[in-house]
Length: 185
Image (cartoon, rainbow, N blue to C red; front, side, top):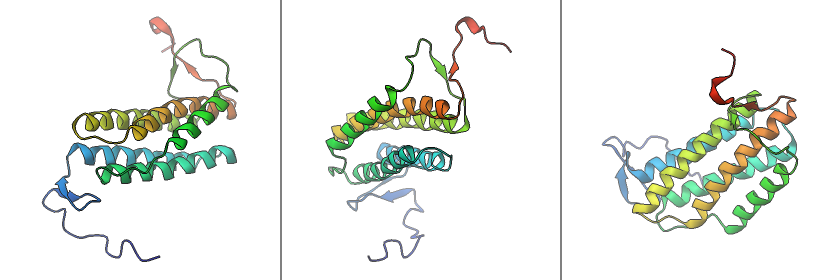
């Protein structure tokens, strides 16, 4: 394999633009670049989650998600390009259903927290939702693939369930929201 990054700095972005995968240059604060950044940030947080002790199955799922997110970033970086396939959305749905079936049904909303791994996962979930919002706004202006929009939506659902799984693994209860601020202060 050839070296992809032989030189890290190019100075081509010094004037506030960046190159897309198709060679066009756009402003660094463009919506497309913001969407790429949100997906990259989510991928980084999942990398942080992978530093926490958990099962081999969860690590395998999260690592595959990292690859999917890298592909998604490539899609966003190359207008009109598609890399995420429907089977990846189906795989998320199957994993989500499998994991959710092991949990007790929720009767209350939950707050971010519990174990450190679950707290990281809640952070990933919120960044995932932001990435979804940014991608939706981008799609309203410049089309991106429907599959990527479906994927990012299912991923936020999977991350919510994973937060609960991680707390269960750690022997910690979910942090339940208490209506009318009955929580002790």
